[in-house]
Image 1 (cartoon, one colour):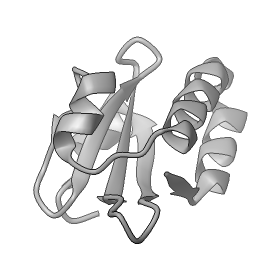
Image 2 (cartoon, rainbow, N blue to C red):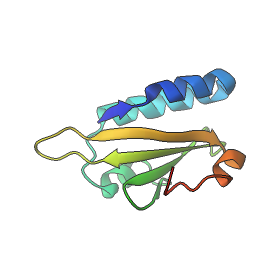
Image 3 (cartoon, rainbow, N blue to C red):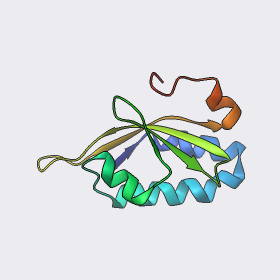
Length: 101
């Protein structure tokens, strides 16, 4: 998968240093993966929440933070894309609509 908006992750962990390693690990897993469906995501991240329109919510740092991405799944002809849409604390996450962000 190609991870887009990686800079958002770096900016976030500059304020929340304990998120750095979990986010780096998550990014490495994503970049090594070839997700063709939500089942592929759930096979690696069983606690991920699958939303509509390709949105997926990941629990980061022992469920301390929430990461919302939009995924364009891989096909035989193209590599998949993962767009970081939101990263924040649970309180910040409660203030957004993960289906729309």
